[in-house]
Length: 88
Image 1 (tube, one colour):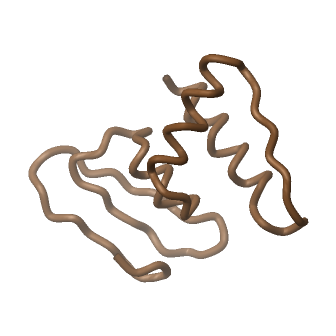
Image 2 (tube, rainbow, N blue to C red; image 1 turned 180 degrees about the horizontal axis):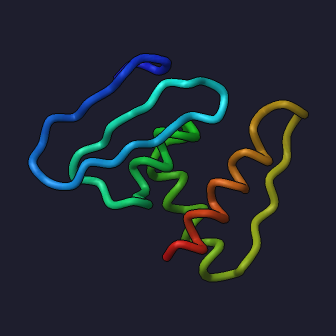
Image 3 (cartoon, rainbow, N blue to C red; image 1 turned 90 degrees about the horizontal axis):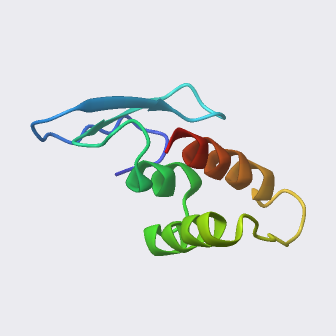
C-alpha cells in the first residue's frame, strides 16, 4: 500500500471506500466491514496491535489519556476511535 495513492485489495467479499480527511484520494478495502480495526490502523497510521489495545482499554475503563506535542494527531485519533466505538 502507498499513502496518497489509490489502493485496491483484490479479494472476494465486501468492498469499502474510505476517504482520508487531508486528501481527495479514495481507498478500497475488500473483505473489510464498514468499521474494522485494519481500516482504523490504516487511517491513523498506528500499528494494529496498538489500536486494538486502545480499543480494549476504552471498552474496559471508558477513558484513556493521550499526551504529546501539538500537531501529532491526538485529536484525529480520538475522533476515529470514538467513531469506531460508537459503531460497535
